[in-house]
Amino acid sequence: MLIGGVNFALFVNLFSVTAFRLVAPPYQLPVSLVSTVFVCYLAGTVTSRLSGRWVLKYGAIRGMAFGTLVAMLGVLVTLSHGIPWIIIGLLVVSGGAFFTHSLAYGWVSRQAAQGKATATALYLVHYYVGGSLGGFYLIAAWQHYAWLGVVIAALALGLVLLGWCLGYLGGSAEVARDKEISKQRPHEREILIPPWEFLIPPWE
Image 1 (cartoon, rainbow, N blue to C red):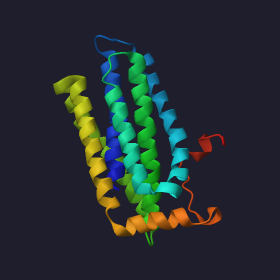
Image 2: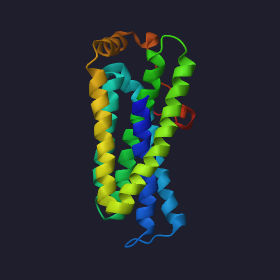
Image 3: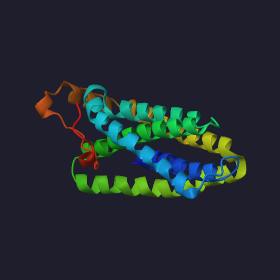
Image 4: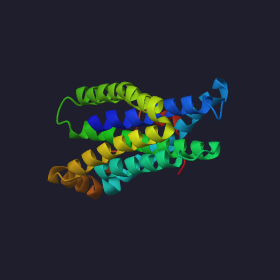
């Protein structure tokens, strides 16, 4: 659950602070144009779909670690001063963060022996609380240390996520569960269906 909260804290607030960056000098872009950066969220619809296939082969925890690394790579790309590179970085961040979120959301449900609805509801509470608190964190980094401070603060969140993922991966029960899923026949497997699945065309 904490993984979901920290993941959302990094993801959504990086976009918000990017908006502050693009309306400030030297870019000074109009707010109406800057708001279009949120179209980069669409990268997440693609990676969310891929997460269902990933978990069947490699396991959810490994996928969350991979998604976090991808998001951290995107954060580093945004260090560039060129607007096209900033957009590419945001696309990569969105793809990695949504990949992690989809796997974490499904993992929480599978781990709950009973009360699955309550477990997923608690996950979403952590998810949005993390997003809210992360705003104070990254905005403070922006105000005091400019974009470099935001990047360092975001990477710190990524390292926290990786630490938790590695900690969970060290648990024998989780490793066994992932192996069990990967060995199941296709019709027996639990397929992850993200909440926004209806937005994704059935491309193969």
